[in-house]
Image 1 (tube, each protein chain N blue to C red):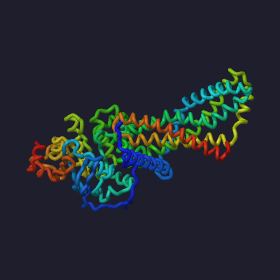
Image 2: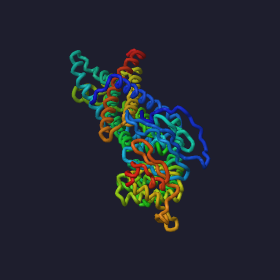
Image 3: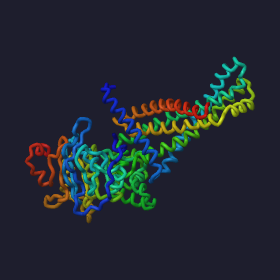
Image 4: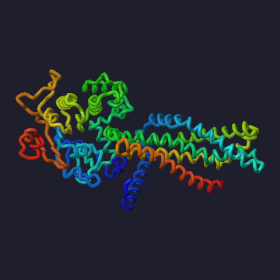
Length: 259
Length: 281
């Protein structure tokens, strides 16, 4: 990678932040004016939401299993194995469900968006779209943004549910806990603030996945090598942003709900 | 910053230009990429019904000029007026309306690879929400014009380079634009296929009399355009009798980002400019 002067680096970084902010604003605002590409939104919902179901279910389920397995070992020392349900439910709903779902969807879809839009960019299809009188942000970015935010919310709920189910399977079959008591404890552990926190995070993660993926796609340069670079950057940046924003949202929610 | 992410700043009122007004006007247009000047002080005018052939060696800024004319990129300085509207100052949203009157054929076709030929050609009609049956009929008509009606249900990846270029022409002409921009329509094609494409450009010129800009770096394509016409009775391309040349076809020659010639076919072949004579020989 060539070295650039700090001044040029600073200018490039600020220009990128500016471009990203403009893209985000236009992507959000486009839904409030015509034309609206509803068919593209539904297609993206299917691709992003339904298409991500297998990895989200598998990740959530086995995270719940391992969480139950690991926490039971520690809880056993305090004679509180029966609290495994509480721990699994709280961890899945507040933290692991939203973050892991975000990261998995980011790996699958931010890369997909960057490579698809990036390929269109380097083969002049984006310019062709503009030449044919279509706004590429409205046609390509807005549907992906709204579809990701909407579907990630429900994918997180699915992940939470299968995670708790996975924890139940391990607790009942390997540790001999009572299923009814596990689910009762899980249900009792969760309060309104926990659920709100867990379901607020995917809204931010979905926004990050779609905007970062599309931003790197729309700014792809340099042929197929550029598409590869854009794809990698999209996954790296969106994953890091998801974790940083997760921390910020967690702190804000603890401030609001006190837990 | 990519132009499609750039916010606009000035709204231009839609104007109905007088038929005598020029369709495209470049005034002192310059653009630099990084530190390399690509176009320097370019000025020329394209009149209504004129076919302007843009000639020049590769890397001379021809494709950049074409994208500037369609508002796909903005110049660093100078003014570009298309149908009387200043495209250098228009908002992107206003440019979309203006581009409804412009058809563009890209260098590498730029067909949407996930859409069938029918959906590619009908793209603009679908955007304008033209009823499905009417759109289909117009697609068939446009594909008949480029003699590719049998490819209607194929995908771009199933077509040869020349066929893709012809589909791209069908996509550009389907909305009956007032201006067509051909960005190297014969680039990378074999001589026979290139002649087929140029025949289509001549046919479009002589049937619809649409104003057009045609980029080429092949002299034989340029002179084919200048010396041939479409005979509507026979439906064939034929040389203009008595070694005649088409009056509506003019030339613009670019070299290293500067205009080295702007004039008629007759003036071009009789030019005494040493570089031009060497280039034409």
